[in-house]
Image (cartoon, rainbow, N blue to C red; front, side):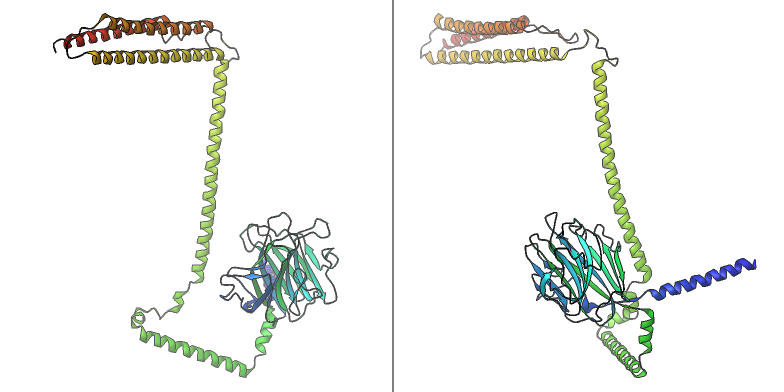
Length: 507
């Protein structure tokens, strides 16, 4: 039992030592607002960016700084007003490069130089700089099909950038990454710590701000101790919008150096800082007392007693993050369920169509691949039957039109007879009745002629048998019924005219 306990003790000591070594290597990060900008309210009402100055074709608003618009031959730049006050730093640049074409130009650059840059030929800044230039090159000048490309180049002021070679012979390191026309902003994290330059890249394909990948890492990089940060861009024959959304700067300090700086504070400085802190506390307490006297109701309710309750705790923040994550997961699952329902519906419709086609094929082939004779109607027989029905309907419409015309003529005759009757009673003459009968005969002759023509057309077409379940109405029976109906109507009209004429004799 002693041996396992001893090994456990040694392993525990080794783990503690390893954790201490790792923690000792992690630098402390402190945000430096004088070397940063971010939305909202990035630019002031007068258009200026606090602690920064921009020139050329750059445009600043509340949300971003457009270094160059998507116009040809444009150059823009933005630089810090004051040099840095720290040795090691980390910069996070959030930007967008968007354009209409498949190929863009020229690109965007992030600078850390000993002096501020001026407008020039290297991505909108001057050549022969002293410091670091990180280039996001969009255009392929050397025709090697290796763009868009990210590269770093250091210069001591004696080198000129090789445009025709895209600086390939002068680069410190680089990586082939596409940063144009991405759905989300592209991010680049540049860290310079203990003469080691590291560049991390976020391709803008996701909204996760921590989705970085290593672009390159170079050791023994010597940069000026103090310098200016800047972002420039340029366009040529092709044009892109180069937008800088955020520029966040952090000071990096090793744990040892931070402890040494605290140890270097003298007793006088410590006493001075303590006195300033105590004065601030007294002033704050005095303001609280004055506010309580001016607002006694709030003082009684105890709103000023626990100011810590005004802020959320770590547990509340963690619960909020968990709730936000679960909400996103729920939304994603709901979208997936909606898409699955859509797919299931489409699949069901497809299966129903396939089954309908299969049922239709079985009905046509009788299920055995043989067509039984005499029981199944052919397609041409169906077409013939439909044509015959259309002919019969047309003939019926014509007969209806003739009957309507005869009725109108009869009414006209009756009206004319009424007008011819004067003050004394006159009997109806034989001529009027004879004229009416002649018109009726002419109408019947027309009907017979049309019926005979229709019968000849039907006889010329192939004869198709009517379904056994429904009785057929032949043309002869239909014509007989129509003639009987016409005779009844004519007799009625003659009887009515006779009655009217007899009634007028009494006046």
